[in-house]
Length: 607
Image (cartoon, rainbow, N blue to C red; front, top):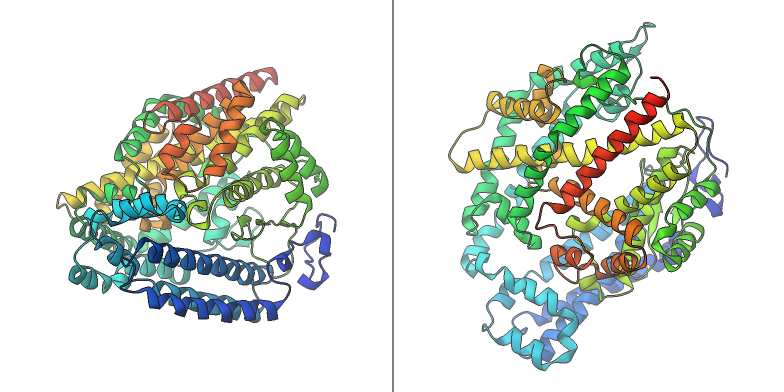
């Protein structure tokens, strides 16, 4: 199937087999899925018999964990099949129904095994260490069990835990209210372009419209969008403040020093990692200000406004690149990762891992998914752009990370944390960028690539760190007893925006409302991991390009590690110590170098 050049999308059944992922590698058909689902439910019911018996013996504990792991592998395959099928055509109610059946089964599993943690933590203190020492078949579960024990000081009595369990629905209430408001209720006033055309505004269209070369259009879109949030700022502030207070309740109830510690401790991340990220980015803000000045110069404007941040510095008109050529470009760009990596990469790209093109009803965007027992899967909506090629490299990075981890460890140790999840994907992008820049002879093409690279730093390292600092401030103020409202939240956010973008950026009053539109703030202390992951990826890619084989060996070991150790330890073994400022500072030095190169190309072109 050629890259689609018209707006007429094929139906799912019209897409050639070679352009589809091979979901039948999981289950040959829906009947096989249904049989597996019924078997899984039976296996879940059998787990209930282990309640109150985990401490009977090391053998009993091992039997339970082994049987539970088998169920998790089964559930993984069921989720993958139903989920991916439903996203091939989101209008197909049959697969939505199958997905709902798996969700129901998953909930039944978690209800059935809810006894596990309280029971493990109530065992005599020496039971699990002795069991691990004396019963070798428990060794694959070592990290899992030790991590469970690590949380003992934050686990309450059975009676208190029973009371805490009653708050589960309340826990997600602020997030649910915000999501309903943000996705179902808020409306944006349409604007009119220079030709008199009425243009509707939505969350999905907001950033694409801000990428327009028409500055007046960008301004109108920006003002209309935030005008809607301004109308509801007090309501959103109340939702936001309620979420902060809810987090403070759990922090105190589970005996953590701060909400930040409560969340970072889930992956055993020291809070110093968070603080040092902010400090390192603060140190590099003069370089961000240099980027802002460069953007103002390239856009030829006297004043740079926040609605000028997304529009490209250079036009990105390129001939459409066929998918087969895109695969070759990615394979060539990732060659520094070694022959075995490239062989696996090509097997995946050519072997039914990827659903290549858009079809009617297909989920938008791109992602890598999959299950433990089979190869990964990548959903794309390939359109032949350079951006799409970076997306291909990115998603295959996720896929190979999962493949290496799944083929190295038991299920319980294969799944990696969010802290490291974006590293392999971003490392691939950095290696591809290096290769494209090295091969590029056209200065205009090089300028487009450099602009793309700068935008990666701006959007991931600087912007996500600003978000992280906003979270830190608001949680600390709540813990100190300060009541936050729309006015104070806008003040905090507006001040941070001024700090991060510097004196050459007009601090438009609308931008102080940006906090009100960010859904990630209802998943506290999540976004900082985008910035740390990006920094680690840049550091690893630099080491791979500089040190060669030893660095590649360490990197492949990092991919294989999965979730077998805490993320900080896994990264240290790969040569990146996130407990120091060094990886973030190193990434920021690359940002400076890219700025230097961009300015040099601009000068050579006489722009």
